[in-house]
Length: 263
Ligand SMILES: Nc1ncnc2c1ncn2[C@@H]1O[C@H](COP(=O)(O)OP(=O)(O)OP(=O)(O)O)[C@@H](O)[C@H]1O
Image (cartoon, rainbow, N blue to C red; front, side, top):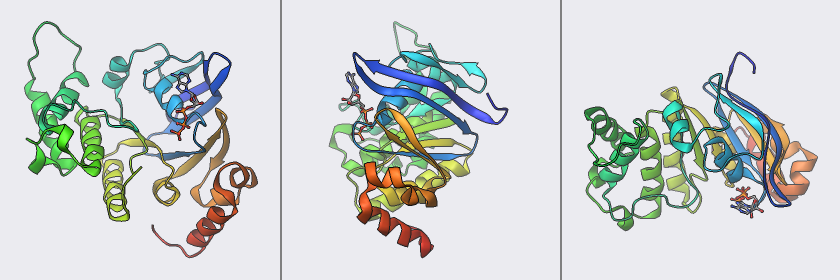
């Protein structure tokens, strides 16, 4: 592992029978980066997240976080080590309030599970308050999660992740289904996360969001990393244009970068 890498993935694979969802992906992420991952549906992006965050074990390969081997670690252990994530689809306790959801994240994202009984630590309460405030959800703290509109559900997952006080956050399609104004809001929030020293890896199909925020971009296809480079090079890569972007989108993105636009 390079001395700079906070996260290092070596030849990571996740196979489902004969399907190579992730196929020998190697990746280093340095502290402070915003790494954007794009690629067609079914390319293996979420599965790669799942393997790194302990949702599913790799078939082969090795993953190190801050020099520690986390390949075999469970999701809770990985979260306690400093990696939090959000999900593409809603992942809230629908019948709990916004505050309760974030408190649960703060508690279990920081402490080992202890049963029976559930008592929130003072530190968890405070972390939950800070995370709600950070995500702009304090005024909705007592709403039931199931009643939230799409944007607030995305914010709730981000609040839950931040409540664990992570060093690294994985965001799976944080702006999927949002309108332009909402996308800008999430963009600002991701920038603030980065400003707080959180290293970010995000998956997104909304290319302008992905390319505007990312310091480096990966494109996946058939479980493999087919491109790695700066955002302004993505639309110039012939393989990426052919397998993912198409000529139309690539042309618009090139124009976007040549004009130096910010969104
Ligand atoms: N638990 C599973 N069992 C079997 N196959 C799976 C499982 N999870 C994912 N796959 C398959 O692995 C492949 C990669 O899926 P994945 O969700 O990682 O792609 P993705 O790049 O995140 O796609 P999208 O952009 O649509 O979210 C797909 O063919 C998918 O059907």
